[in-house]
Length: 315
Image (cartoon, rainbow, N blue to C red; front, side, top):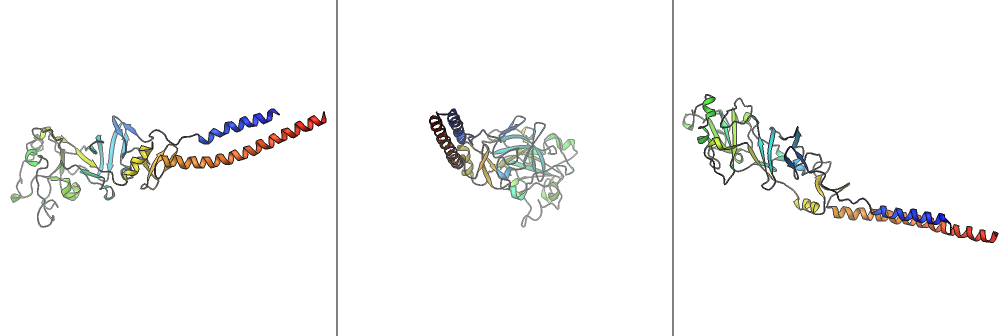
C-alpha cells in the first residue's frame, strides 16, 4: 500500500484532538490590586468586571485607590469584604485638630440609581458645622426641626471639646435652639439620605465612625472618615454558580446584564453550560471534519488499490 495513505491517516489523526482543545475555564481575569488594597468582586477596575451597580466607581491613580460618586472623589483607605464596608477619606473633612469651613467639603451623596448599593454605616455620625437658620436641618422636616443628637455615643457635645474650635476662633454659641441654630448638629445619614453642604446651608462637616466594641476616650481618639456599607443587589445565586464552575462574575456591554466570564467565552448562566455548548459545537464540527477526512481516506485507499492492481496487470 502506498505511503500516501499512511501520511494521510497520520494527518487525520493529528486533527482529531483539536476539537477538544481550548478549555473555557481560566483564572480570574478581574481580580487586581491598587497599592496594598485588593480589588475583588463586586468591585473592579476594568470595565465589564464586577457587579454592574459598582461600575465606573473605583480608579487607581499612582497606587492610590479613589472612589468616585456624584458628590466627589474620595480616597479609599480600606475595603472590608467580610463586613462589606468601604472606609473613605475626604481632604476637606473636619477633624478634632482642624475645622475646614467655606463649604469646601464634598459631604456624601450618591446617584439615585446607585443609592441601593451604598449607605454610610449606622454607626457613622455626620457633624454639620455652621449651618444657617434657614437650613432644611431646622426647617421642613414635617412640623419640626431635625433633632441634633449623638450617634453611637459620638456627637457635637463632645466634639465641641476639640482644640479645632478654639484654633478656628469658633465658640459654642447657639448651642441651644432657643438662641438660634447650634454651631454643630450631629445626624445619622439615614435621617437625611444625603450630605450636601450647599443644599443644607452648612459651612463644613466632620464624619466619624465607631469601631465597636472598641471604646475610645474623647473625640481626639475617634476614627475620622466616612465608613460606607455596601450591598450587592440582584441575583447573587447567579454569581455563586458562576464562581463555583470556575468563572468570574461580570456584566455585559449594556452595563446591566450579568455575565459569567469563562476564559475566552462569556455565559449567561455558568461555565459548565458554556463548556457543554462549546463541546456540542466542536463535536458537530468534528463530525463534519471526520466525515470529510474519512471520505478522503477511503478515496485514497481505493485509488491505491486501483494503482497497485493496474501495476500488477501491467507487469
